[in-house]
Image (tube, rainbow, N blue to C red; front, side, top):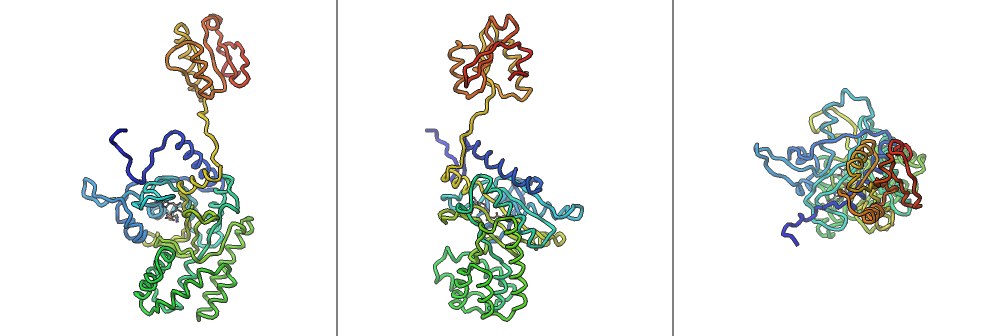
Length: 432
Ligand code: HAM
């Protein structure tokens, strides 16, 4: 054992792990492109301030942050959304809308490492700007479902828990909470499953005009509602803002209707237990969970129509989500959806000391033609080289034997059928 250890919550990616990561990323990229999203990227290190004001206190407490040599306060990104909002804000006026972008990259959060949660992880992000309709929300949610389906996961494996911060805000207003305190109230509600009731009641009591016990009861009632109809009934008894509630429920119905039109109704659970921990969300919010409810969220997102303006740019509607590689990778392994990853060597070249030079010439020429070629680095006896060829998984062994080379030929052996052919060297790229 050496004396260096990897930091807690970070991962080494051995070739098998890299193959799984690439497999996951390929699915992300293909699904995003299938939905017309374009790829972008941003720096991993940003001014701390970008996250401090925008992401919410929970994430800010988890920042990997430090002072750089120029005395700037900088942080490794804990999420992509603030960087993306800055990038889009900078160019929003010159871009055709809706803007549909995606990214795959690493983020860092100083969390307690546990199953499904690490300090360094990859996220696929997809965001849509310049359209505030439920159809835009649907475009994002359906992409999340498309990705998971592309791995073979089905409606019995996962579901999207869909909720709405606007309806939560209406509830809070009806309960007498000032607009300025709504973000704080939402963050108390978000933590309900993680705190004991006495703490929640005490936190609610800190909000002006709130009877903690009573509001706690109402919140639990809303969290158990699973249909818009029942939500409407709850509000009827409770709230004077009928018009606003009705309008919002009708927007929610539109979103559900569009998801149904995509054939995705079975993947959706209306679930007001979802509030989301990030501060910038303003409308529909959702998280994707494994059905069994065993693991942490696979993905999360929602609408954030005021973030870009808060960064000092113009008004721009925004909705997006991110899916992480950790919980998803665990789920794929558990369900047996991870294939084996061959090394993908097409040819293994075998040669002697006498034929080494000509073999090298051809190895390089084949590689230039994007044919994957491996060899033993130095000539050893042919049986050892043939064994290495078999272990490499190559489809063909190309044998530069002394007598074949004298005839300007090589022997091509099909490693599956053991069939051998003598082929003119000039012809064998065509014949492979
Ligand atoms: P989030 O819910 O914080 O949202 O993260 C999205 C997903 O990233 C999670 O569901 C999880 O799969 C993964 N993830 C987050 N933290 C960790 C961690 N410590 N270890 C492993 N995986 C993790 C966001 O980040 C928003 N920026 C998403 C978004 C994009 N909203 C709008 N656009």
